[in-house]
Image (cartoon, rainbow over all chains, first blue to last red; front, side):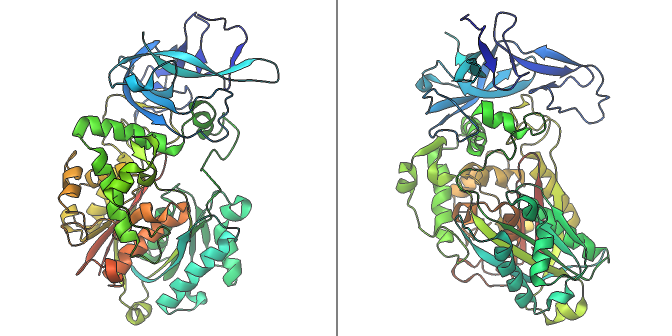
Length: 144
Length: 393
């Protein structure tokens, strides 16, 4: 993995690379079994006691459940110094967790996108902030 | 609960960005509704106002600002926001107030001035505002969500790019005949298919833009006012629905969705429409004209299924077979739909109700659905908001 020391997520508690691989920061409700992303975007089953919600990391890899290619630059407050447009957005399914998560597709030839293909979580450099840190977001790329 | 009738409606025609104060647009619609109902302002006993979310203090208290234009009378004024189903919430409250006997005559209105460019996050606070992350880190404007669902639909049911384009062809044909519509140009299938992709598979002409517009509806149970109204329209049901756990749809502003469905898609609209059918004592087969929220061509197709007009995956065939045309089995969006109007958040649900009322009152000229007796207006709002109104004459 590239040097991540000077990288910071634009908004915290969404993507983690402290374990040596990039993974999304989810939470699981041990009462109703539902996974949430982002963690605080609760979606409990009606009647759930809401007890025992624990922070978990999603697996790095999942399958492409849907995608689109965005042909115009995303307006502010989106911000990037990279020329990413047109860019892909994927909906990646984590089968055991029964959740699909959306994110920008990077490092992937958009013409090769196919439903069901294996994707892995990564990060995308967006811009350098005033503290000279590289600000990043989570993203998905095709497994090579 | 007693019977409630629509006796007056008013619209400010849909248009683009404007520097005019939103309440002035609202006043045009309310003036129209008062004139149509043939009543004076003092007969309004409650004001249910759609919040204009981009209008700051004035927009959040839109009912008070409107009241001050017409003259403050001390009546209850309630301001409500349910995203694009805001107008549904306003008419539902007006209906409930009158049906319960709290008031005799009530006004529901909404007015929205399009923000320049795109609808984006309304705050900068990622902790409080769930909408911020998808903008700052997701790069996900609203049409992305529709494109992700549309791609799934194409894979599952074989919806084609021609089907998506055909929706626009039909909507543009009807919009051209509607004086309230913002876009009046007609398009051929080839022209739509040549328009650029906004987010593949959805093209520029297959997605509705944001607009400016205002709409107002006066409802009453006052027998004298009903008797003197021009073709009063009965409200058989006006309902709101929210989402159901396990709905697989990725909702606008969310970043995830369930992978294993345990509820119908667009479950908020499923909920609202089923409540309305039950309350009105009618089914989809009884609807003579339908206004559905065609925010994109995908919506047009999926809403026919969500609201029970056909089975899942059969909407494309209904469209191709001409069943949804004026003169077909179920005329859909004779107004030209959102495709010809664009979204004016707090006003659009009321505008749909007014189109339905106008169809039942035989006021629609070239786009008239002949002999329509029962009409249905269906809305769609982000994060699990929906409303259904069923009207009859």
